[in-house]
Image 1 (tube, rainbow, N blue to C red):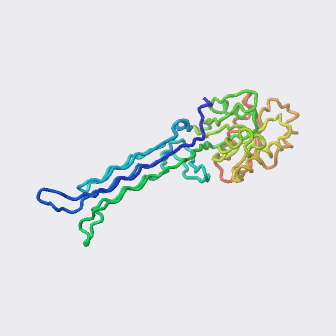
Image 2 (image 1 turned 60 degrees about the vertical axis):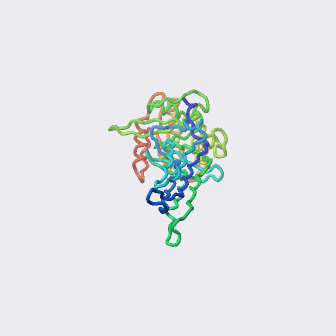
Image 3 (image 1 turned 180 degrees about the vertical axis):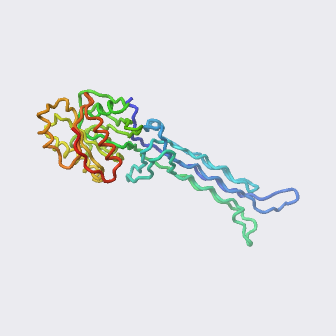
Length: 339
């Protein structure tokens, strides 16, 4: 369900304290004055982020605001070291970043299955008195305390990982396209902002190949300043390999709409303009044959494009060909427009 897609949580994490070193002396029946034999304290537990491709949302962390690792155990006599505090693994979806809520600085970024990043180190265990024996001090009576753990509030943000990001105004037909081109079942209705969270779909291609497409909530002018769904959706575009601009044939001026969409991306993050871009003119079932040449003449120059109708499933093969060619060509040539 859409309500279960959580892409932002703020949690409090705390690594474990290190155990204290032991100040202990060897005492046996025939060795009344044995030397120091205090063991070292154990390390406190780390807090570790781990990439999990089976997770698609941060929902499992929404109600777990505090995650604490255990402390290390103290050292013991006989040079026995204290047990290490167990590490705590926080499984997160691929595409998750951890940020400092005060400064916005990125602390960690998870992009691969099984990737592990220590978010907070556990405190080191203190040294036992064995370590402080010297020729001039044969009976050191002090040992080190363990280092304290770290405590931090951290923001986890999920940026959807997909090959293709659908960019368009609300009600441009993005959800409909995803539903017919893949097995995804997004909510579809004839009003703006039906899509409130990203939807992912795996699109089957020729010879058992596939790519991932993300339908993302629609842009409106001012999205980069937080209007509409604003920044919440824009961050999901950052990780897409290519951007597919979807503009309906019924738009008053396709070039103008494209320019507005492009400007919102630029205002949010100028590096988004470095991504490959292609254009799909949707809802062409509403277009007469006589209107098409006139519409083609008004399209943005130099932008690969294709006419599609998700309802009639026209132009979808050409669209997939164009996407695949763009995805797998470091310097893609502009393809001949598919009509």
